[in-house]
Image (spheres, rainbow, N blue to C red):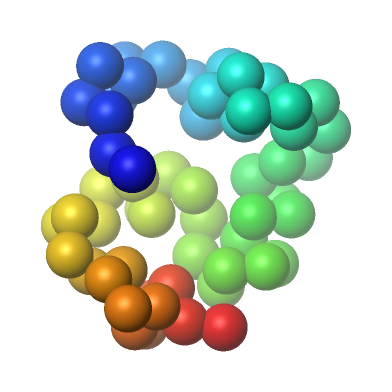
Length: 57
């Protein structure tokens, strides 16, 4: 779910809100999803619907 109120918050801060306390969160995200979280957060909302690229496994 996209929350526009979090746009100004650093990605690491959002990760920590969700319980991800690893300082290498961005690196792990990129390795898992093939796209850095910074780029992911700027995708149009429907870009990841139905797990289509660049979000597909």
